[in-house]
Amino acid sequence: MTDELKPCPFCGNPFEITNAESGNRKEYFIVKHEYDNCPLLMDGENGEVWLDKSRLVEMLNTRPIEDALRAELAANLNKYNAEVDQFNDGYDAGEKGGLDPFADQPDYDPDYDSWRNGYQAGSYDRLTAELAALKERTRWIPVGEWLPGDGESVIVLNFIKGAYDIFESQPNAVKVGVNDVKYTIPAYLSNGVWLLESGVPANGIIISWMPLPQPPEDSHD
Ligand SMILES: [Zn+2]
Image 1 (cartoon, rainbow, N blue to C red):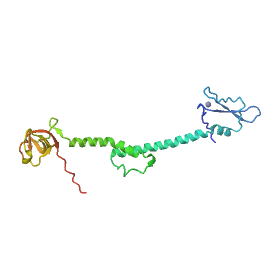
Image 2: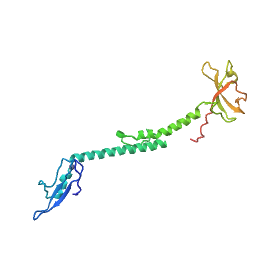
Image 3: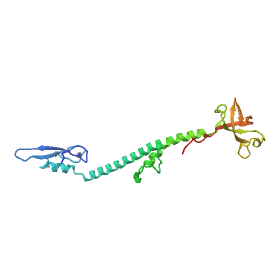
Image 4: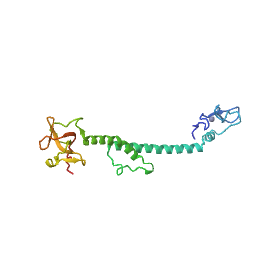
């Protein structure tokens, strides 16, 4: 039995056990607890005398409702901490991009599985950056914005005013739209002049261009 006393359940202030002896009486104990904001008044002068100190401590410390609430709080804190750990594990995995969120997830309790939430949060910035880079690589770049390097083969979007049948002379031209005379075709810049792959100057107005797709990486799979 410890002599550690819990604080008062009403006001939170301590109880004080005083050891008192007088004359030939046996040793006895009184409790002092006098606080203006507490309904529990124990001043040791109203006959509250205890002979067994350990019983007194036990009585003051017996708090079934408080103990049950503390146990419930501890259980909830454990659950919360487990969820935070799951979330953080998922966040780290998502940030690294190393795990499949549906196949490789650690075996967590599905009742409060926050691993996938963490994975999604951790994946977001990485995937957003990858998507932006992908869009940048595959967008049509207006020629007023910037131009490819001299001699670099690209695909251009060409606009020819008036009737002009490019498609007979350039079979690799791809018409854009139904009625427009816009088409896409491989071309490159040579000393500021757009040339088709055949080496002849591109007629019309080059509106925008796009880098050619990269070939797949050599793989030995
Ligand atoms: Zn009190």
